[in-house]
Image: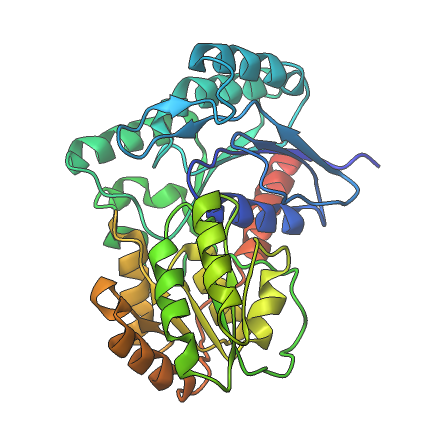
Length: 382
């Protein structure tokens, strides 16, 4: 019997969290559906090898932080040429019928991709008018200077083009109303799924090793955190320190950290880990940025942790503060990167009990259940 097919569109621009969260959801969906995963950013070496899963890489686009302009990361083609190539790549996919289309983040972000996304939705519904369209969104919405006008625009797009909004959060920790004032206008579309974690890690908790794991997520930001940790490694001679750079860490920063590490006993620097959950579950302490996926993996593995929020927007800081209030992790800021305060924070956290929480971390499975229920209902009504 042919299984229903789902199209999942994800465009990542800076880190790896959007891809990681989306792939975790896809793993859960594969129990009941075939999944075509469309990735619009560079290949970061993450995929799913399983029957029924197709990974489509569009010609990648990235965005410059300083002016939000798009560019070809390979530096070979103009943006217009990339758009045309992406449209050509999508065309054969959209001639097929999909039971559901899941769009990661848009319209809460990725507005520069609006024409591509709305065209994708229109073509999918042309091939199958019964296609259900979902927005897959994290716990905290991005804040802009023209917030009220922006929220009104988002609501209009949701009501015109989408059927459901999947909020990957536990409202007992952070609800959509906390960061999106127009939530009452779309209450009937919203489904809280719980937080999404990568369920591919080890079952149970392996024995903790005397090791401090420092990780930079995607690596586009956070070099200063790694350097600060390296500077105090000698103060913890009983602990090994392992620094994980990210796929976007600059080669200059990677080399600098490696040179420092070679001068210190029990300190190593490695690349992006394909098995981060296992690394976390064995560590005595995690020190990292405060991105969605990293923080949820910390909670899922019950790893003592310090997080350093990326302050360009409120997302990481807000999440970190909410979890610090529940005594689930510690937070460090720029002033804490000096050797003495950082070492004090590390000592304090190494002596803290492991975090244990009742926060809903079953977001991937719940997302699959919600979509399956909608598709089953549509089938009964057909």
